[in-house]
Length: 254
Image 1 (cartoon, rainbow, N blue to C red):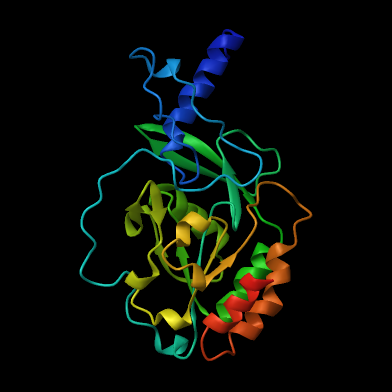
Image 2 (cartoon, helix red, strand yellow; image 1 turned 90 degrees about the vertical axis):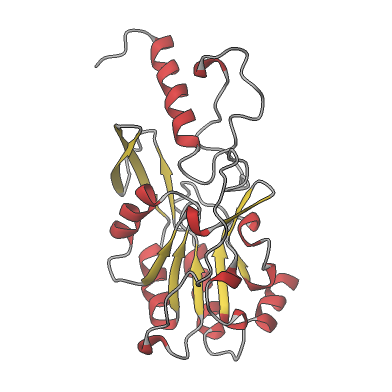
């Protein structure tokens, strides 16, 4: 339906943004200040996109978490992956950027149902992501680990990973909610920590295991970005090491 007025359309945008803030992991909490009255539209929801690198997954309203499962997050390693290191790869702002605002050059448009309404999510692929995933799939046991909800991230991963690179996919419920952050606790994976690497644009995600991290810049829409491509020689070398800590310590020291 056509918008009857500018104010009506902007009101709709605000309302939709507030719904989506809980959806991806990377939007700021819109419930920090109590609203002036009981209508949802009075409190200003956050912008869907922010310049710079917002701390992801860290300022979303508190969601009570069940106690962590006794079993590990990952199943037994496939025989074909024996001897490979496990690389945990983030989704939003690491491999793709998603928006509820229409993007003319979107690589994917994913319908997602929220509260009984289907919304279109526009997804941009980071440059060189196809080459990155294919190469990483040869070198490592790759796991997608996102603090976003499965009903958004699963269809995106279906479209993104055409080669079956991701052995497993872990979503928000696999995170640990700690001091306002969705933390990816690598000790719960069921893999030897000295052979686990996490690739993520948000330091909040790996706050428990910074020594296992390969940080990447947050990506939104820069089509000249070469970060994923530039990382491949580094990962090729890392795949041949006995353990990851020495190499990653040198990386942090640069």
